[in-house]
Length: 228
Image (cartoon, rainbow, N blue to C red; front, side, top):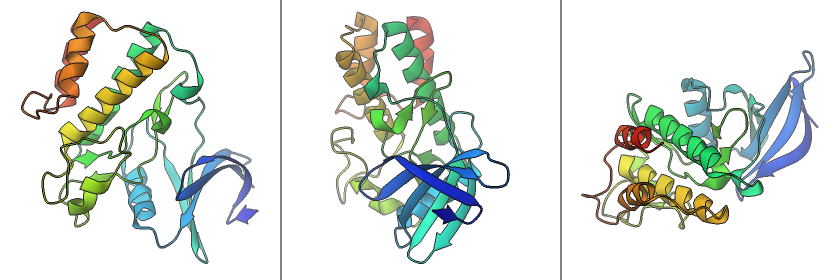
């Protein structure tokens, strides 16, 4: 299937509201990633806007945006790697991956305005020679007109339980909670028992008492430097 200047090939991923395909630019033969969504979905436009704005080596780069009837296609750089759910990790590799992710999330939180990912979990990571954070469809800029609805975003297993309708809005501490739950899950999946100090760090990151939880990723990264 041809989308603008791009040839769309086999499907390589996606979820309930999107499909992701491998593709290439027909003139240059450069390989790309093509994400297809319904043109009416607001999340798609949010993701396209953010990926065009952000410049970080661990975040996909938006190349083009193409509308076609009731579908819209986001053309992104093709990344190399695999899901952390599909490989066996040793403790050193896993620690490196998770603190790489902490640095990417810290980068997002320090944008002006701050950006909150909103759906951090293992399936939204790609690991390899470089580790990547994926899927910005539920991400929001602080203060955006859609921001009040962010309490409902994310995957329940990883979502900050203190975020409820009419209560708190999604914030830095919510991404921190998701990061901590993800870290704990990947430790367990790989049969790794965390050290006492790492266990204490994760307990604080996922504390249901938001006064105890870390306030920002800089605190976590600083703790990590003392741990490893």
